[in-house]
Length: 157
Image (tube, rainbow, N blue to C red):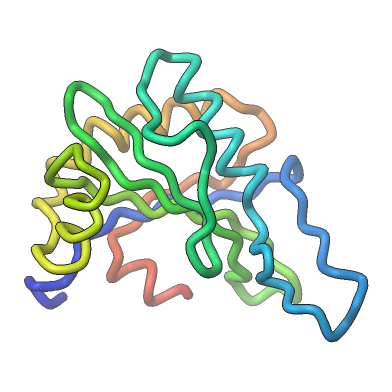
């Protein structure tokens, strides 16, 4: 892995809870809007219930993903949620969460830190990984939860 690239930790899981509906019009772009808004909103609600601060009231769309910023113990994290077809099965529906740690509380500074400065070491992500892991494992409708490095993720996706 290139040391200058953004370091992300990725969670993969399956769940029948979230909408996988494709547009009825075959000519429509299936990523407009992308799948996963309900999944991202669900995670935001769960994090708010345990007292974490979410920078926006709801997730916002970023190309083929849904994003939000969350503050835990004074640290700000960027959370990206998306659907992906992963695996050998014909339609292996997998939900993906990408987690990075932002360097600053200002939205523009966070974006520039993510794009140009690079991320902090993965160990700094452990507190948020633990929180997300607990929130996701508490739901009986979420299964096959696993955490990967970005490099491991690229091997399966």
